[in-house]
Image 1 (cartoon, helix red, strand yellow):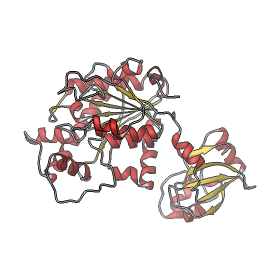
Image 2 (tube, helix red, strand yellow):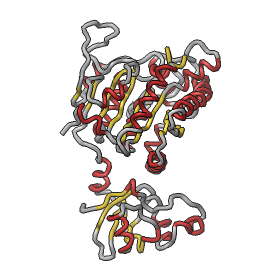
Image 3 (tube, rainbow, N blue to C red):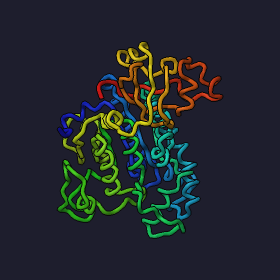
Image 4 (cartoon, rainbow, N blue to C red):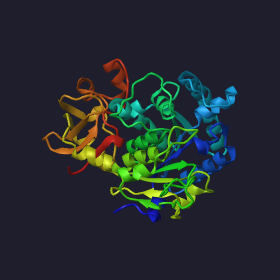
Length: 397
C-alpha cells in the first residue's frame, strides 16, 4: 500500500535536502533566520520517537563563497565557481555545527560526488560511515564536493547557454543542486522519507510565478514524461529545478523511499508535514522500506559464499550481529569487495546473504582469525567485520 500523509510521522530514517534558495537569499546572502528554524525542526525530529534518524543534505556553498569573496554575480568561470565552493563550504558547515550544537546535537560533514555513490566499493564505504554516524546519534551534513566534482557546475553553465568545451554524457541523467545526490543517499540508507525543501510549495499544474491559475498537486503517483514536461525550468541561483527534483524523486520512489517536495519558507514545514498536514507534493512509493534488502536477498548475482560456524550463525540470527572473521570456516567462489555472497552453514544450507567487505583472497586469509589480526594478515585494516549487519539479510531466502 502506498505511503499516506498520516503515515509520514512513522518515518524512521529521514533525509532532508535544502536547496540553494532555502539556505540563502538570492543565492548569495545566508538566510540565517530560515536556516535556524529548519535546524530547530531537525533537532526536534531527531529527539522525537526513539531511534528516529535524520540526515541533512545542504546546498549553498558556492553562494556563501561568493559572499565571503565579495562577488556580486554568479561566476561564469568554472574554476572560480569551484573556488567559491571551496571557500563557502567551510562557512556552511561551521554554521550548521554551531547551530546544532546549541541544541545539543552533534553534526558531521560528509562531502560526496555522484561517483561516490555510483561505484560499488565507495558506496559501501559511504553507507557504512553514515550508518555508524546515525547509530552514534549524529546528524550527518552532506553536500556535493563542488571543488573537485565539476559535472554539476558544467551542467549549470550549459543550462545558462554557456559552453566549457566538455562534451556531455547524454546517456546519464545529470541531477542538479544536490537533488540526485540526496536521492541516492536516501536509497543507499534505505530511508523511509526524502524531503526536498525548495523555494516553491511543491509541484504545480503550471508555473505559479507566471500562471495565477496554477494549482498545487497534493499527491503524485507515477512520474511520467508528461509530469516531467510540466516541470520544465530551473532555479536562478542553484543548478536544479522542479524537473530535477522529480527525476530525483523518481529514483527514490522506485527504490522504496517516499518523497515530499515542499517549501523551505513554510513555518515548521517538517513537523507539520510529518503530523499529516497537506503541505507540498507527496510522491508515495508502492514499496515500503526494505527494497535494498529484497535486492540482496533475491539477487541472482551472488559471487560466492562464506561458510560460518554454529556460534557465528547463532550470533547472526539471534543477536543480529555482524559477521566477524573468527566465525568464518571456509570461503567459496570468487568475489570482489561489495559483491553479494551467501552465508552458509557447514552442511551447505543458505541462511542469508550480504555485501562482503573484502575480496575472496582477503577473506581466505582472515577466516578463523580475530579482527585484531586483520592488519597483520593483510598489511592493512579496513572493516572489523567481513559482512556488517547493515548489509546483511538473514532468514529464509
